[in-house]
Length: 140
Image 1: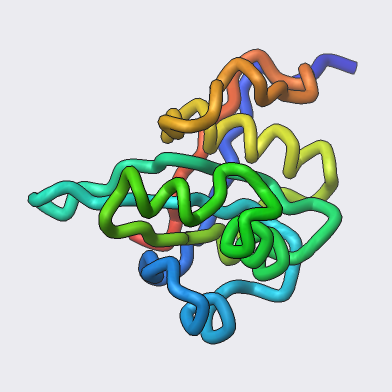
Image 2: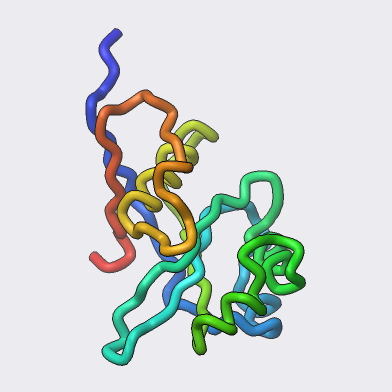
């Protein structure tokens, strides 16, 4: 059996980024595991990802709550001291079907977005593919 050398994962992002405020967590953060990003915007409204994580053993809501309370690094208080406006977004759906797919998808997201506060080399793929990419299908 020959393994595919490349893999493209399709994702559907949250319809927008939500300001990282406690009420927004309750109103918008998913109660399911998944991949989320903390985002800031420049003066031209260009997004810059400052942190990304894959909440695999808890919900995205719980992970964001931990950032909010300071129980998970980076703590929101530290982020707000550095970035005036902080937002969160998440992947609503993807064509990743297995935990291995999710690991490879998270790897591809980190490689594409290069979060400022996360060393991309610390996120490892499964090794099933030589090249992994991600395509945002929500904007098609």
